[in-house]
Length: 401
Image 1 (cartoon, rainbow, N blue to C red):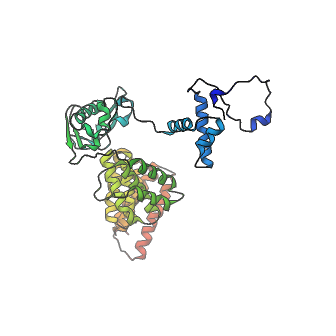
Image 2 (cartoon, helix red, strand yellow):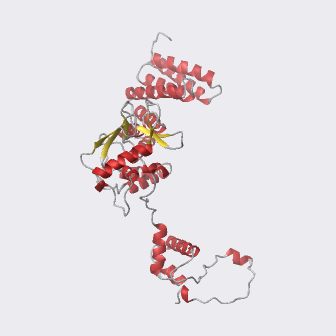
């Protein structure tokens, strides 16, 4: 078989394409090129042909395509490997180009309110950090903090950073701060920083994080169609994680939140309590109590405790959730009133019938006035009727009867 460099171009009479020519797949032409140089179009076509061949047969695709194209199998393998390899993080990339180059989540804390600090947008389109309590007048510059932390890491613990051929910039070193540092506390300026070092540095880059993330993504896709399979994937991703003592981790928190939702959907709320509690505490530590993910985790924890029969704990969680909605969305918002209505149901489950009826009646009146025609008003009224019927069936003699 001749190589592409040995092919000779022949003159042929132009042929007008027919309709059949457009319907059947056209073969990739063998292109004559300069020695050891091939057009990108040819390389892309060869890589695509290998990918198509692998969908039919797992082995021998590179050799088969190379034989069909008259190419060296080693060259085809080189093209396929280069096309499918993940793009590495360039060490000279600026930290301002991506938020992933800044500090890992959950490390940075405010010296004044002692709360975790989250990303915030600066007026000059830059990135900053702001605490959840807004106790500082403006966010602190994220790039400056990453530069300060990175320089300190390179000075005292450079071995914990993956080796690169070029000098490691401070911003890239700061992206690996979670391996060496347990906590970073910032004061009024980016230079006013206190570092809490780990007793035992994490030397590995977390080689299981990618696999764990793939399991979580697959479980999310299978949650509605194959819940049992999704639950098994989440259990695998949380292997070795004790929800009672595990530190805050974004992947663990996401997996625990999904697992608690699945356990609740499958009718096992008691098994979901530990994971829902860990997901809530971990999310608060990473994002702060006011973050939407933290609020969602709080709501899930309240639902799990209620369905598991722990009504006293569920009552306090729903109260906390209602106070948050009242402060952020307003006391008459639908979310606030819906939470109050559920709180009334929990009060009834605890045996406080009068308090439950009074709270639910007030909530219905406010909801009907603020949201006329909303279907939730009818559902609230049905719950109130059920409470009255339950009290009558049990022979309760309340003063407000």
